[in-house]
Length: 272
Length: 274
View (cartoon, rainbow over the protein chains, first blue to last red):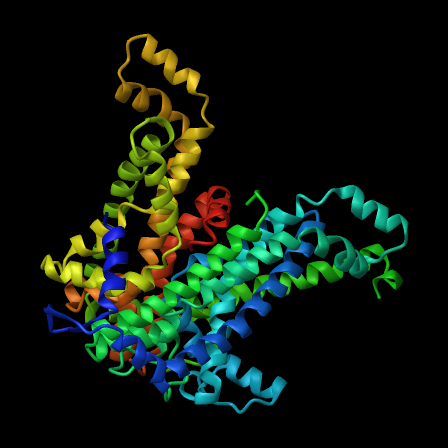
């Protein structure tokens, strides 16, 4: 009940006008909130930013995790140690990780300097620079999530029969060929799972973007560069006091996540 | 390419990648740990071990209610874990073993709720908590998060994997339904219950969106919210902020190191929910 009521209420709220400081006054306003969303450039912007975030995060974490998992599976010693090491960031708090990365990517900070030397990015405070703030969020996010998906992939690769690898080896396939033609096809359902689960997680990104705004009155800083969908709905509800309007955006999020989940259920094999 | 490499060269390459990966994973944490022992004036230079000090820790305990935040976090985490273990275990058992009208429907509802992200129901949850007069209270951080669809699902699976015969035998021997649950079923699902405690504990300890929304009074902050507030309060004192990071992270890392074998698989199954 604790959960059913809010879910129903979030849909009801989407059709209402509610003020944060006077929330017992709720008046139905029909589809107005959704019509407003449809025309609100800030909302379009938040969908676009979320989409860019997802498009950067999902392939990166999937590829890195798959490669690390394949290597991890093939080595003998230290398997548990490395798996634990990769997994550790996922266990730590988003606030802690984001705070540390903010120091690493400050102008003149260790990683900002490294990025400037290696990639020629200007040595700036990434989270304060509109063109670098979203990439900054991507880095923090991928850093935390890779370990989770490494573990999922290791589980998948362990199910690949060893004979397949042996047969390929006999046929003269090298490490890279075996990865490409044996491991990847065998773990395809897991890849699919990681892509969809990663998508569902990434569209909900909030903590990291909230932390870089440092409790500011306006979230999504700098200049709205990190105003993701959840930041948009949070901002509307808790900074601009439009609970109804924020809820309409929440319903959009719910639909996106729902579609992703239905897709997983439909296409995923029984295991997992 | 690898066809030209000998076996040992390939192995060296593989370990090279793994070591670099591990360095990337540990790097930021080691940076935070080292910096937290540096004097603010020394940062960001590297200094020798004997210049390291506990100054930042003393400073942060003196200038922010860190002890209070720790106590809040511990209290809320224990509250959620104890509540979750009792409620979700009972619910999972009921869904697995007891035939009651609407059981299938109830289970479908649980599965449905599993899909709903917390972000999407934050606003109504906030209204509910506000209407109860629970803003800036421990209840608001504990009560709504005890019953958890994923943990119910997990416990239902654990109970379903037990052979029913054992419990039936106990019932024939005169034990009531509750006694057979407590004496037979629960001890056999201990690993499920431990998984539940670990997941609920970690989620709560690290939770941020809920406490930052439901608490505005620093006396009711959890560590995550407190750390975030240190960022603006001690904006120029990176070393002090890093002490906060270490204080927030160490308990989780210690727990992780201790229960690593149990934790990794738990989170792999919970990955989609995380």
